[in-house]
Image 1 (spheres, one colour):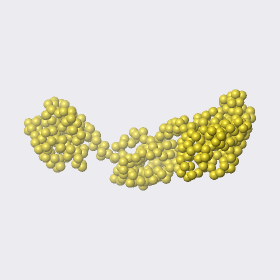
Image 2 (cartoon, rainbow, N blue to C red):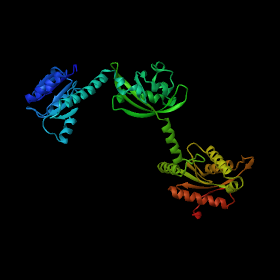
Image 3 (cartoon, one colour):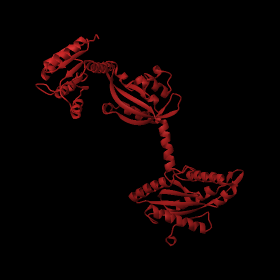
Image 4 (tube, rainbow, N blue to C red):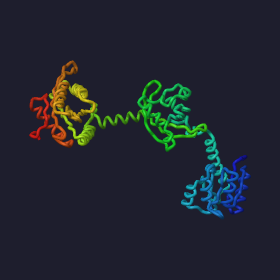
Amino acid sequence: MKSTTKILVVEDNVRILKDVAGLLRSSGYEVREAATGNECLQIIAGDKPDIVLLDVYLPDTFGYDVCRQIKSTQGFEDVCVIYLSSSPATDEMKITGFDVGADDYIIRPVSDKELLARIRSMERIHKTEKKLRESEERYRIAIECSNDGVAIIKNDRYRYVNQRFVKMFGFTDIKEAVGSHVNCIAHPDDRERLAEEIGDWERALQDPRLYEFKGVRKDGTGLYIEASITHMTYDGELVVLALLRDVTERKQAEETIRELAYYDALTGLPNRILLHDRLTMTLAQAQRTGRSSAVMMLDLDKFKEVNDTLGHAAGDILLKAVADRLTGALRKHDTVSRLGGDEFIVVIPEVINKDDLSMLARKILDVVRAPLAIDEHNVAVGSSIGIALYPDDGTDIETLMQHADAAMYRAKQSGRNQYRYFMEDLS
């Protein structure tokens, strides 16, 4: 086999050295010889080989130390080092050899055919690696085979994108995308942040980082993108490398899980878990600021009659309508939650005075009892509301809920479609 591959054989046993060197020369390799570790390093410094066949035990040093020095020298990291030892080797010795950078470990005696086959195997691997290194760095990522969108960015402009990027964002072709501003794929809400992330050279020079942003396709449809941002050298310039993955399905699944975990499936209102979180936050803030807060327990009057006469489907329609009406009657920072059945909780984080709170309670009573058309029937139900105040009626969630519930039952006993504040005699 005619080959220009350069092999350096390092062996202090002259007979073995000549045998191996002769075999390699007869197989078409360009061969150099060395008997010591120092001589090996001197030869490499003057004429870099492709492969080094290295004995483990040398007169002046260990082969492991020679291998370590070769692999740690800039420009020689790609030299293939194969241990060729006539001494038995334990697994620990082999592991040590590989740890310092060796590519293979061959124990003599070994047949000429096997030795040549293993050298040729390493030769093929290193030739392939050399070709990859000499190619433009963008191809080291196998860009066009990637399932991720790949973009190379310089000065906030796309210098290169792959076909997956084009398809992901709905461009006609690569030419349409190249030269575009980096923000063209970002939702308006995320454009400024995207530019900051990609334009942050100090961060780009650090380890690759992941972050998510909301993207937009050319046709205006939205998607969620997970981006890995790092840097590379491209055409002799330092550029930003972005690997983009469409995670829309994952985000939608996460949102569905979140909805199931924290929101009532029928009305879309916060459930008990989220209500507890909101109340915890409300009470913590109220304690810091010294302000009053309120918990309203609301129960629909005669809801069972609607279910019994018109059916559960009509009851569900009514519950959703009540949820919408309650949400519409409250401020953005107030919370309305469905506990289950026809029970609702309203959390008012800040109460200025009781008059305002009473006015809100009357407003809720009015909006709830407004007639609703269901299957050609005009349905009207009232509600009973119990109110407990923080800190007057309790300083913890359980106490406030119990006292609001007690006040609600007093409202029902008083004729329904009314509100009542908690009083000590109710407990």
